[in-house]
Length: 532
Ligand code: HEM
View (tube, rainbow, N blue to C red):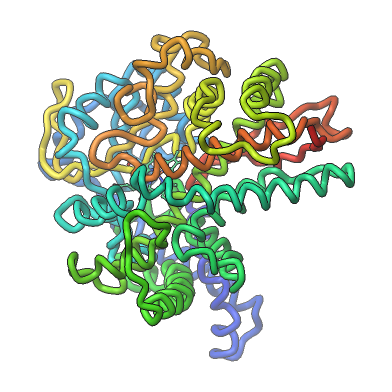
């Protein structure tokens, strides 16, 4: 564990190694060794201080909660959580029969929630108590305070930014105003695939779908000029670099108090500051350009997010940093989440040719042959397509552990008092695969959503199906994501028939996964398209 922490810390300051060597007149390899030794010493001291057992009232209350055996000094239960935490946490909950379970992840007590009854209490009955977010220095730096939507603590400011997102940026009406942009972007992807089909070469669908999601967000954020100015490359780079820092279980989420040790904080958060500086350069220029054009915002038209936010700036008393925080959020929360859903849908369909055929029959029967594209209106009538997307969201939720919540007051749940300030993680993945609730829970069966279409939706009403969360913190991007995913999938299966490349035909698709800001596949999805 210590080795891992040192590696993380050393990595985060690696780029400063050359400067250190120059400054003290030693070689780079000596500087590296010196860096490692200093990091080890600093970490030992910091971990010791962070791990000293607390005897506060909160820790006494937490000690009463069910908690698996095997807690170790300093690292707590961290060694029980594998590289795919949603699976380890589900297995621990099943093994110890605890649907409400306390784990000590490094120095942070974390309540793991894995049953719909406990979720009902936390995201519905007491949602107002559990609707805050844990503080993190990295999100403070990357999200200006944080003053975005995703990381802002619960309160009046968060309520305002969430309202702006749901009413002005991502409402049904606003999403409809982007349908032309969506058509253009889908058309560009189809043209690339058609070229590959003509050349009989495979396409990297993972990359194409990720670029599509990123470009849709670019379009929404800064209008249709984004391609001409080449900003989309930079947006993609910055979104990727930021998500590495905020993803999953990182050093800061295990030992947040380390950030208070100035030397460690400076080193660890240097990267975040560097990325924030680059976001500033890009977003300041775009906001300046928009401000000088002085375009007014009309809710019926396709006005981009920057225009909308500038028009609302005075009414809501926003600073420029607040605007930038919301824009960064759109990239971080909206890009990978949507693209992994489209990718998994294609993986499942490739592995079940009868379902691919069924979907193609639906799509092709609704679009007159010879038409170049499936339209939004036609997509709206495709019930099997909708079921395929729902089933993909059930089996492969992009955020299997939702985003961490934080309690703001003591609260009684299932006979235990959860103290104020407790970090809460909801295992949405485990709920969506609960065999007591879902028939053939691990199998891809879209038809289940056709039979049960009335009661099952992804808007937080069904507690065993929470791909977008539930309650106050529910995702505001559902309309935007679903519209783009439906449009892209319908066109992929309408325009092309798909095969595995020759070297994969026998072995099939490798389904290994990796856990980061989203849960995604390790291997790229390479497929051979044939024009229909
Ligand atoms: C299939 C695609 C998507 C999935 C699966 C997804 C899922 C989620 C989940 C699980 C949460 C956390 C809920 C919680 O904390 O309980 C969330 C929050 C959020 N999402 Fe999405 N999301 C998607 C697309 C988008 C898009 C396209 C946008 C914006 C363009 C977006 C913006 C946000 C924001 C701003 C939040 C923070 C909400 C808050 O803290 O109040 N998401 N999303």
